[in-house]
Length: 125
Image 1 (cartoon, rainbow, N blue to C red):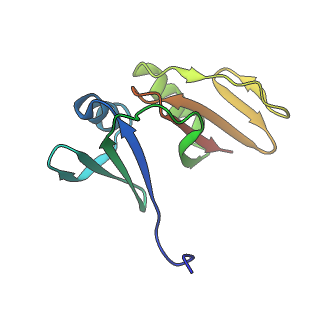
Image 2 (image 1 turned 90 degrees about the vertical axis):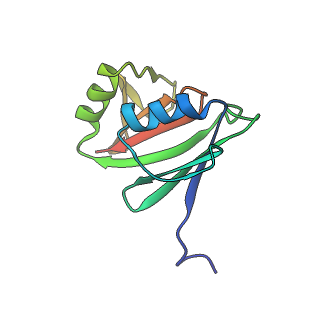
C-alpha cells in the first residue's frame, strides 16, 4: 500500500529560531519551505524533515532521525564535535565505544541530540 510513497521525518521543537540555527548552521541542511513560523521544511538527500513548533518537543526518548552516511561517519562526527555537538554514549550489547562512535555488527553509529532533546543519529561503515 505505501511501499512506493515517500516518508518524511517530523521533529517537534519549542523554539523554531534555535532549531533553525542548529539544523542549518550546525547540520548544514537547506530550508525548502517555511509555513508562517510554525513549520520549517528541510531537504536532506532525497528526503524531507519537518521541524515544527510543539509543546511536546523533546519528549521522544527514542531515535527520531537516522542519516546513512557510509564511510563519512568519522569526519562528520569530527566536524559536528568541532561545532559544539555533544554525542550520546549508550551501553548497547554487541557494540563497543570508540571515541564517540559505537562500533559493532559491521557498522558504526553515533547518536546526538538537537537543542530540544530529539535524538538523532548517524550510521556508517
